[in-house]
Image (cartoon, rainbow, N blue to C red; front, top):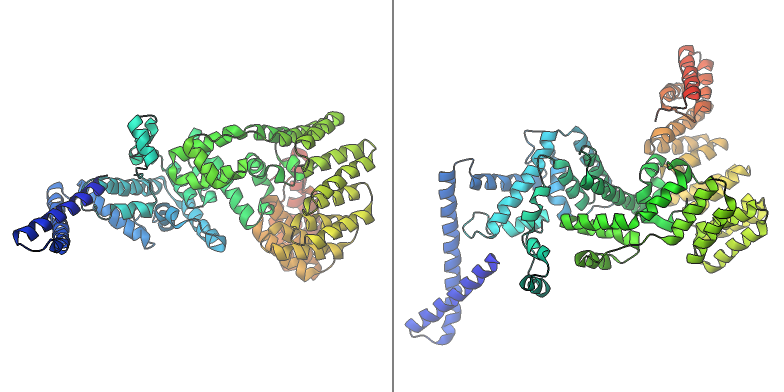
Amino acid sequence: MTRIVLRVGGLLAACLLGVFASRILGLDWWVAAPAAAAWWLILSGSAGLLRARVTVYRLRHEGPNGRTARALCAVAALEDVATGAAGFTVTSGRLAVLEHVVFLGPALGPRRGAVRDRLGAAIRSEIQRSTPRARADVIAGLVAVVDAAERALSAPLDALYLSAPTILARLRMDTRRPITSARLAAILSRRDAVVLAESRSWSRRRALYDPRHPEQALAVRLLAAGFGKAALDVLRLAPEGGRVDRLRRLARSCSLLADADSRGLLSLPPAVVARWHAELLLLAGRRLPDLSPDSQLMKIVPGGAATLERAVARTPIAVAEFAELARSYPELQRSIATVVARIVGWPIGSVVTAMRERTLSARPDAALRSHLRGLALIEERRASEAAAEFEAALSQAPDFAQAAFALATMRRQAGDAAGGESVLRALVDRRATEPEPLLFLARYLSAIGERERARAAFESGVRRFPEYVPLRVAFAQELVAWGCGAEAATQLDAARRDHPDEPRLALMAGRTLAAESRLDDAARALEKAARGLSGRERAEAWFWLMGVRREQGDHTTAERIARRLIGALGAGQTSQLDDVADYLEERHDFLRAREAAERARRLRGSGDGAF
């Protein structure tokens, strides 16, 4: 309000002086307008001259460590950060990229595609080599700049008075909010004490940017800039706590959304799915394709379907925690609104309004909970109760494809294969313009032994929905099981054209191409898979690549890969370790062959792996 009052007061003073001057000189009234403009320029110049004099006076009397000098140094360091140089970490590690994103990233908006990936990799590299002092220096610099700009907003003689709004806008720090009619009414009636605090929100939020514990603040700024995985790396360095846990959940959710938007959920490693299953289920809900009996998701999540059902039950708590984070960190409002909108299925604008009015609430998906309870009952071998849960799920959501497939599976196991097929046929009729029901129908027909009808369903789906990758992948898997490797490779090649950066598709294609003796194509696919995967999946890609190079006669490369595989293959891959041992023995590398055989024996005995 001070800036507005000063400007209005200065304009009124210039007008009065103009009128006064025209009256004194006996000129016409219209001369007052240019005279007022002249007086405004004189007053503005005088104010600037006075501000410079006051600044010089303060610098002389406060000394080099005074408040004015520190403020000017902080703003100068901010200019260095804007040019891509290290500003606040010059002596503690030179984290130039991290500083640039923390200070200016939220105002520039999230990057997309390859640019975001490269920048994210650079940030994560700097986080890994950062020291506690360097991380503290980044947040201390941010606090110093915002403190200086916040003080200058209400101090006309401050050296930063004119540049303070620009500085805060560059940092995207909403320290002052405009007085709207609704907020003014709330202030006058004192209905909401929070509104009064929000009018000077930096004083309320400053404690959250504590340089003694900088990881939370760094994560908030990285999330606001759209770098969820980098925020997770920072939060791994933070002590456990309520707010840290909520920020981790938000960072996981933002990372999942970024991967889903850029590469699809196929890009998520199983280990990530196992750790992030709660966030994945909240965001995808019934759209998650693996919510079916005997799926990979049920095997890798500790506790299986029962754990997933408890995660769905926590939906209201998760939404309330996200809303509380948005109140604490206004710069995260957009990111949180995007996540919550995906959870509750509302438009983002409606979520923002509900968070602002504190009316945001959510209910667990009752149909999804019934379906997950049914899957848990299958794990307990209680088939009739599981079928009842699936029927309850379909009564609440008739188009729930995974529940229909699970119910069909239960009927098939009970001897009613035709009844199970009728459930899926009805789903296909209701959702004739969507590929997912056709996928489940084709899988079901294959499970009951109707190979020709299943092939026809798959081919119909691929013709109608050529870009739906799960349908092509499932068709390829069935073709491999039927002994039609060449056709499977064709389907996987088409899927890879739509998703060229997906390493799991490359692994599947490489295995299929190797079985079809297309060794050069298989080698290229497997090398790409090995670069993009990690853990056991990467070891599997290297194992198949070893076999391809062996068939090609490139034993130098094959032996090098085999030696690496001795320590890379883990539990569940002991048969592959045996093959590695046999190959090394064939190449007369008896010492390494014995090492591989011993490792395989230990893994069989302990059940432990390398990962």
